[in-house]
Each structure stands twice: as C-alpha cells, then as structure tokens.
Image 1: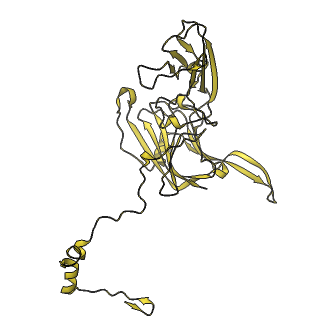
Image 2: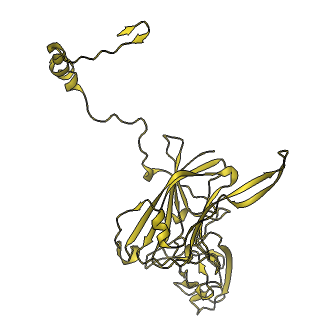
Image 3: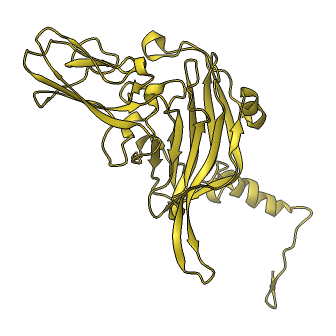
Length: 345
C-alpha cells in the first residue's frame, strides 16, 4: 500500500477461501492457478559459463606456454599456464640457446651425432612429442618455433610424427643428441639441422607475464607429481619486475630491470609443498598404455592464493619458478599449472 511517498507491506496471517482459490486452483486462471503455473526451475543466468573447448588459444612468445581463452561474454580472458616437465631436460626451453650443425653426407652414414647431447650434459629441446601440454603454442622471443629444422641440400625434411612407426624423413634422439635418417642421405649432400639446446647449467624454469597493455590476475595453481618423484633441488618462486627509478623531483633516471618483487618463496622438500597446499585430488592411477600413457600413479596438489597475484605489463611483471641449483627432478613427471584471468591494465 502506497501512502504519502512510502510503501507499506501488509502480511496476512491466514488466507481466505477466495485467496486460496486464486493461488491454488482457479481453473479459469493461468494453468489452473498461480502456484500451479509457477515454474520452479532456476532462472537462467544472464552470463553463462563459457565452453573453453571451442575458444581460441594464443601462445605467448618467449615465455612458459600459455593458453589464453577469450570468452565473448565478459571482459576477462582465462589463462592456463603450463610449465615444462621438471624431470625432462629436453623440455627446459626457457633460457635455451639456438645452434646449427652441418654435416657432409658420405652415402653410408645414417645417424649423425649432434654437437650437444647427454654426453656433455645437454639435451635438445623437444616440443613435438607431447611432453608438456599445448607445446605447439610455445615460441621463441622472436616468434619462431623451437622445433628443429632439418635440411638436405637446402630442402626441408619432415620429422616422423610423434608415436608413429612409419612416415617422415628422420627421427631425433633429443636426449642423446642424435639425428637419424630413415633413408641414408646421398653422398656429397649437405645435411644441416637448426635446434635449441638446454645446456649443462640450464635448469627447469617457468618465466611468463602478460603482453603489453594487459594484466594477469593469478588465483590458483596445481602441481602434478608422479608417485616416483625424487626432489633433487629446492624450488624457488617470485615475481620479477622492471622498476623505473626517479630522482627527488620526479625526474626519470633509469629502469632497474629484472628486480625481485619480494623475498623468494623456497620449497626445500616435498613436505614444504604439503604444508602450503590447500589439499589434493584423489590419486590418478597409471593409465593410457605404454606409449602415450603414464606408468606411475600421479598426485595432484592444489594452491588457492589467499589474495590474487597481479602481474601488470606496465612493470613487465613476470612469474618465475625455478630450481636453486638448476637441477632436474627425477621420476616420471613433475609439472605446474597456474590458473587466472587476463584483463586490460
């Protein structure tokens, strides 16, 4: 009831027969009465959850593999940050270096020893055999691929597809550093291979930040350990930024690059991860077969940040995770996945 600009709401302690007829059983009303006509199903949300399976994926050049999904129904893009495998040196592409080997074929030699390999503590970067998620999106800082380029007399050759037993012109032993041709190159031909190397001092590392004009807001992370994991080194985490320096009058002097935003978070043992984690998922048993599967059970630990970690591109802010002495872990698998959103800064 509206009275002098105010609203009075009156509640009845009992309903009359006429009220009940209107609400419950008025056959002449909508669908036999208001109550009978009411649909109890939830009202659809104005903004529905986004099906990320059909959203575009974008790689970030020169950083840890990132999948950006771009929902059209809000201003945020979802971020999935996939790390290298901390147990596989051939996936340590951050800080790896490019090189070129050249050979003269003699018509006899089928396998060529590359300059770098396990014999000198190195490994060839391998981003084509499913050792890390979304590996096809990873590029160098100049936007080129880490996948080796093999040529015979300048003609590009094709690597045999991952897990296949036929096809292609060659295979590579990425750990030992060997190039093997399916058919022996003819005598006198020049064989070249461009590839990237994870050297003796290169350890596992996550290093990633938003593109110009954007900001990442990270809110959760998960770590996947195979049950046979052997933690051989301390794991460190920090945010790296570029800090502009000004004098007392506000005049720009210089920029201090690659500064740590805080004290390193240090995980010295598996116990450190267990102390910090919010919990774990049920153990994932070995599955998938001997070729494309896992041979060990997998434990997944989850972190949810109490306050979101913000990385603004204006400071060239990057998340960094690395091992203190650049050692690889031992075991079948150890990876990190970070979740968040991207928005305009």
